[in-house]
Length: 370
Figure 1 (cartoon, one colour):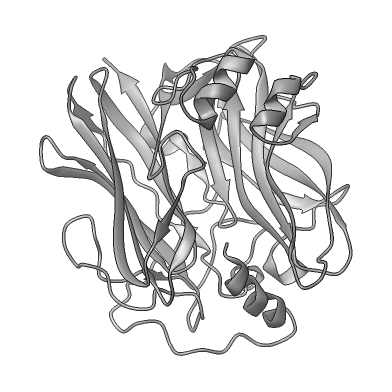
Figure 2 (tube, one colour; figure 1 turned 120 degrees about the vertical axis):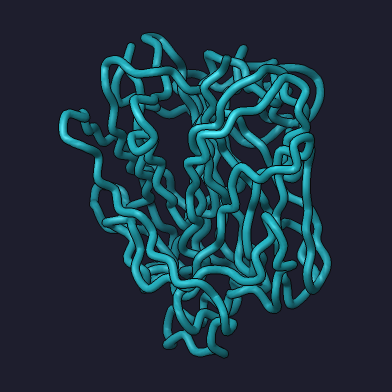
């Protein structure tokens, strides 16, 4: 989230959101609800507490890309970013996660922290430090590679923005992310406070899981692949992309996107086969001030407009809590295969009213390898 937009959003906490209507032609879309099927285990864990500093001198209070580890922080992580020692409980061990419902709440409560209460979950990344990341393995390259080198692993297996899109592997069949006994989990997060007092928060994540499933593994793809997932974009329409080469053959079973206000969509293309796996479209409430400033390309993988949403699938994040900010990205269940050596490309569409130097565009895919 850019500072210029945050100034507007602080004011919006006291005012009714008023703006020009959503672009004509924007599709109506209702996000899916969290509803694990009968027989699934459901476990909620909390990570924290974390105190976000207050606004000061008109600047938003922020904890930016801090790393939380279950154990002592390696002092060398300070070269990358700040580090916090924190108990990161897992929902189960020797099990398969089939769904994830992320949330940020005031510590010790179930009250959501969102734009209407003066806070923001800018982003949070769940990391398994016991495995290597599929696209950014440990090494001397960029920040994620170096983190893996310091910790022995760096697998990014889930991410949430303030829209808190639900992961629902349980809808794609008997698929699950395997959690081995002894796996070490951690978090990378950016949290914001738009009030004049510090606020203390906790992550509240609810997982569905089963003891046995077909294993699927996460593949992280974004427009700044192993860095901070951000790029500078111009005013007006832009399509930022990044291409990676598939190191193995597999089948893509689930994928979702994340981007910021004024985004239209994030899409995943098999450029070798000229086929789109998924177009994850941003959703905004009617009359939002943060919808894209103009149209998208209107071609395959690049819709002309964002979605209009009038409800939200998250049970603890009603649509009004977003105060017009992006509140949803539609997920995909493509069940499409790809081959060794295929060029896999992520695209992110924005239509910005002004140039923006920290635009995100992320997709987390789950793959069944062959």
